[in-house]
Image 1 (cartoon, rainbow, N blue to C red):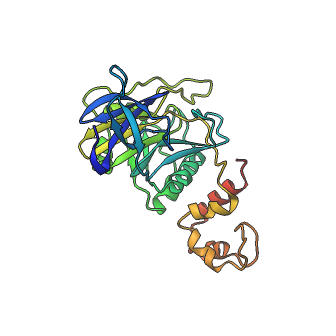
Image 2: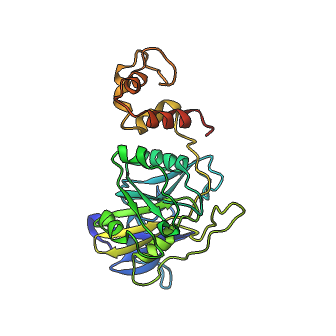
Image 3: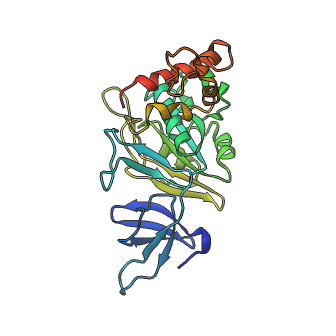
Length: 301
């Protein structure tokens, strides 16, 4: 069952068992007790035959990860198998597609800002997908994201608007669809396939915030080169675990200006001689992005 240097791909995790794609077939496997890392969706692993007849095959190694999307401690919706401070939602991801809705649930830029920071922390490129464009609601202001050069697609999983643009965006990549509960991530996954793959549900809740339809991350392969990981919707997202002095490094458009700060421990929010503040005042850095940085710097984690 070994698959050479690239390993086999984990497509779903079910408590103490994981489903691994082995030569195109989903096979339930049991992680070896001595593994340093517990497998997550997207991991590449090596698998050995079962020790005893009737037992599942054994995941013997989790290969080196890249591009991991991690939810940090302090998130009230976290479900971690061992109560660790970090919960890896998916690994070996090329692109995080942050899915937001024009309404139902309402558009939340602060949620997008937090996702962008977490994706940057995990070494993952980011794109923005605005779903439910069939509702006839005015599109939210996306200027700050356009100015960053973020790819933006406007789609409707219901009537098919923009799906070709979404397919072109993700072609040849392993991507993760992530975002607020109820924005339609699973509906988009289904719309990209001829047959329904992921469970979906109607938006509910007292404020139309949406309810969870995907209970755990799962990988769906569109073709030999393209795969989508659908993740559970999240209602709250903490930046706990990101130190204040680390946050600026997760803003690649602002971080280069820290080289000219007068003080090495500059927090870039009030100090004299701050290179970031000077760049914003000189028009070299976007004020909107700096405002996002300040907001995340001072919010509870």
